[in-house]
View 1 (cartoon, one colour):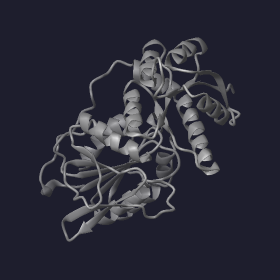
View 2 (cartoon, rainbow, N blue to C red; view 1 turned 30 degrees about the horizontal axis):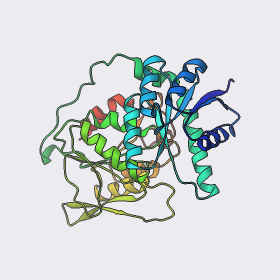
View 3 (spheres, one colour; view 1 turned 90 degrees about the vertical axis):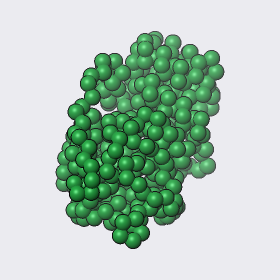
View 4 (cartoon, rainbow, N blue to C red; view 1 turned 45 degrees about the vertical axis):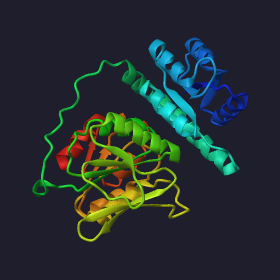
Length: 350
């Protein structure tokens, strides 16, 4: 089997060297070339025709956003953005994803060998994932937009309410998948929605702002002690855990904190979903989208045990078929559907 050929574009000689060394620890990957800025990156990509491009966001001459747009117009290729963990870096990364970039990794400050290993594992996993889905990402960019899927009529009033809370979880490929779902939900839903995506702190805030700009439902980052209101979407803050808690018979609020401190994921989909299952027994809907690993499986299990409903994204439309696969193989998915139909399925269940 031929190796995955990667072009590394970064204005830092140190980062070019580190990314190259990280990628080439995997025998299935080779770095076909390195470029010092966006303009050189576009030129080298046209010449080398790599399978994947890692693209720095902030560069001289031509930045990562401009280079991504130029490549997508001239030679669509899967691009993995390499972003600093700042609000500005997050905003530019989501701008690049709107232009066609497939996903991103964040440049954490490496303080230990464990930090370095985590970044390396994430980098290699995402490069392999988007390389396998190369034709999918290219087709997303080049296909002519068709009519949106039919959206069922929104049901009004408590008498017809089936689901009181929707909990959505995603990881690798999550920003694109979540946007595909939220953008197709109509205003006026008689439910609340909590979205938990594996992202760093600055990214979740920027993501919430981006979703609020393009969605019909209001979207914001969840805050500790905030009341849960109908017809709103809340994003779990990165670096923290978000739970839904009951106060009395009809009042609900968010508890956002650091506990447990040894949790593998922050936010943890399992923790958020489990709290929803406990607070809304029989009236919760769990949705698991693309992502590596199995976070969310136990939350979906509890939702099912409490009488709720579950949806998993199908393999064909996942960037990484890890989290949905773990749910489906455990027999916990009521429905398995492609990403473009998940919004309609959510509406059908409300």
